[in-house]
Amino acid sequence: MNFPDYYGENMNARINCVDEMTDKPTLLKIDNGKYLKENVLKLFNAIPDGMRSFCKL
Image (cartoon, rainbow, N blue to C red; front, side, top):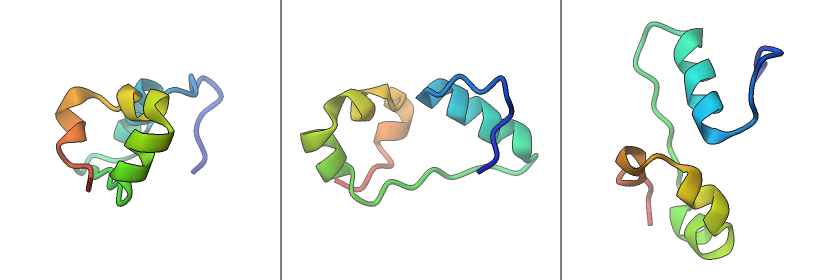
């Protein structure tokens, strides 16, 4: 994806930038949430709570 120069390189900034790219709802699909949770917990925890329920664990 081509993020703007002001992109903050964190999960909240990613969500904000994707929201700005379209007027349509955007789906962030994480197919291997279990791996993410077990091996990259810091990144998993960066996913907003309301979105974690959509992670396939």
